[in-house]
Length: 272
Image (tube, rainbow, N blue to C red; front, side, top):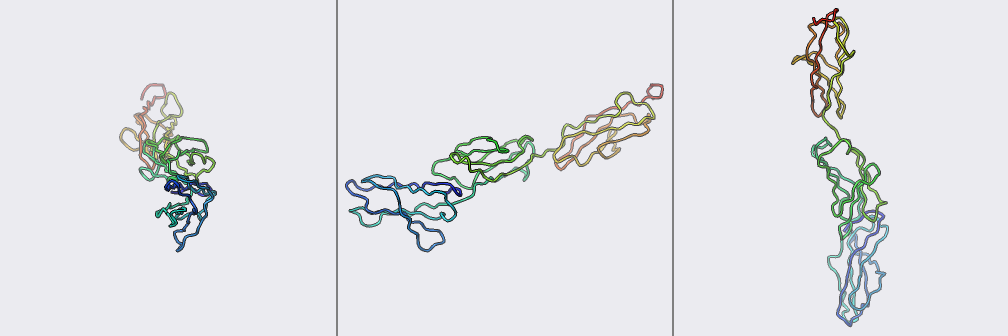
């Protein structure tokens, strides 16, 4: 069994003996795994004649309570100690969240798994309560795992967990940000409206990416004509007419915008 620091835990125990016999002595033996001899911890419960609960409750546990616990008793007929030889091994751990992701990072559309704690802290399966940014996120009975099968940008945040009945004891948080390749790539033209030969035109590339787009490449048709978020033509000529696209790139990929067409008009508003 295991439990978390500064919580309570019940070590389950039930004893039986023949009808007519009486329990005369009973004791829990506690042994640290590094100790050669056990430390005797007396049982405070009272026992009846036949079948009784001999479970041991430990409150506000610390690492000093970790070890092996064994229970033994005698009756007025059986004077030899009757002992559970295997006992119960108790571990004390910190409540924490571990994260595993498909690519070692949290990428949009890929899975990420969060695990609460390092063990199951009771004989019966507990309810795990997940918190996101300090607010309740979900409750999962018996499974200490929160699955995000296809991560979305809104899944970014700070995640912690607690155990049902111990909601006030929150784990330390795990923070992550969902990243994605460029998307929603588009081109805007300044000034808008008709483009007259000899005027100045600026094309601006707009895109959404996380991390932010690092490289912008401009194309006229299939030919690369420039780099940077904006592409300016200060003294536009008729030969500048054509289809322009912008390609955005970050650490996770690249995407090209749909084409915009520049019509360059002569001074008298005729197409040159």
